[in-house]
Structure formats: C-alpha cells, structure tokens
Length: 120
Image 1 (cartoon, helix red, strand yellow):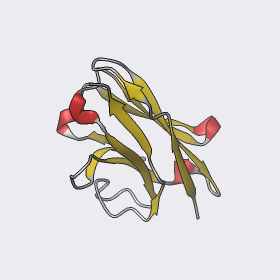
Image 2: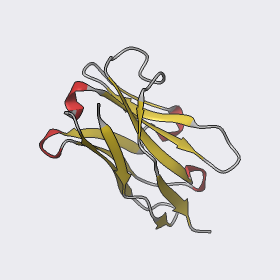
Image 3: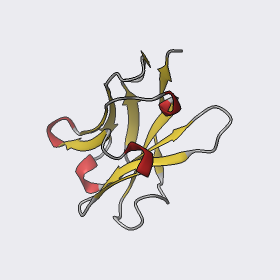
C-alpha cells in the first residue's frame, strides 16, 4: 500500500510559477500511475494530469502550462505549474493506481491535498 502526501501549495499571483510535489512512502511510486486532480470551491473534483509507464496526459486547460514528471530518486512526482490563472485556484490532490488504463479515473490511493490560491 502506498501513502501519498502533497506539498507545495501556496498563495500566488496570476502568471506565477510553482511546483507541487506528491511524496510517497510505503511503496515505490514508479510502480504506479499517478494522477493529479483538483477541486475548486463549489465545484466537482476534476482531472488535471496523469503519468503512467506509457503516457502523460493533461486536461486541456493546463496543456502547455503544467508539466508532470517523476523523481524516482526521491520517490516523488512533481507538477510544475507555470503561468497560473485565477481558475487554477483549488485544492490539488495526487492519486495512485497500479495499472495504466484510463489514467483519468479509478484511482485507489489518494493524498489529502494541498491548497493553491491565486491572490486577487
């Protein structure tokens, strides 16, 4: 069983960059597909990006701005967020699963999330 902990969320200005990290303990993250999801106030949770052994996929609104990468030495996955927008304000959670099918859904392991807020 893998335990996930997110970090890196903070208050930022529009156009800023930040990196969210999903750290794991209990198992090796490279065995898993890793997804990032976010939930804004009053909205449903939505898919952001995912990385498997086969592919990396992004939700349309973050393509070209967000980059997902594995850090196998640190047993972590990073979500680099560039040119953040007000609509990126949300709690960001990482998730893991042991297969590479349909990486937008059906994750069994979840972290508690980290808050990203765009300052008004």
